[in-house]
Image 1: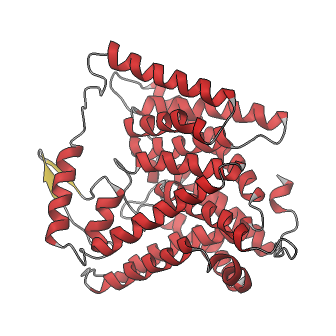
Image 2: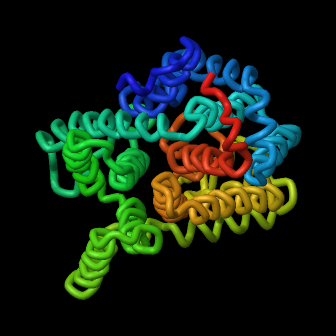
Length: 395
């Protein structure tokens, strides 16, 4: 743990604490009656994350100019943020300032992570290990009461922001991905990693969230493309065999919930996109549609949601940004951070097709699937822009 804070100013330590809190706080902070997450959580993030991130960005102008501006993904990111803010002009919101805050909060998380983890990203990997263990403890805390009051057909969830089985499972699933992919620096960390994976994967199993299962399975099957170890090939083979057994032996592989109305939701989303193709409804504009007697307030798909809110220009920018993130991971697949980025990107690419479509929103598990990979990609891209003979300081 000392390595997380070594060689840092007090402001950097505060930013690091904020990064830890934003990832763990969404699991343990109860939601308010009218706001999600609660006002207390947001206020704590202002003090721990947003203000320190602003300070770090403001005092690292050379870092931004030399290592971020040359990256295409960063410039596309700025265009996407700009278009989202411009779209507030036709969103018709009563309080557009709230959406400005949500857009900026996502940006501050990604850029704050990049600045804090500089110059080589190893501190960020250590933080992920520590957060993964913390999330495993949260999973244990949720599993106990769930098993005590379990009834057939129940699905485990969490509290507050993750008081939804799909969102909670995605958070535990993405933590499982990075705990599996991060190389342990010592035997003790390796033991801690496997102990943490037990409650994380157990939570995912009890959530009955098939998109997360599919995301994890896809990661395992594709892992040999960027991980040449024999264990990766064996795990991929076992995953394929398990999937085949499920298809052959189960009378209903999808379960009683079937496709959960996803095709019908997608059809309605396409209708909304056709109605407002170029400008969209505007960032954060509320909408509602009914499918089979149920009311939905989002499209359950990142890309159709982006098109509904930001129109085809926003969809194009989102697609380009997402492909650039994946490409950065592929370029660095020979490095541990590149393999981690690719695994997170594959997992998120699957899960975001079915759940958590909010691109620019307040803190929620979607940040770990969208903005954490983006921040890691910026860190890898910075290596192409850095002069090895003149490394930039940490602070």
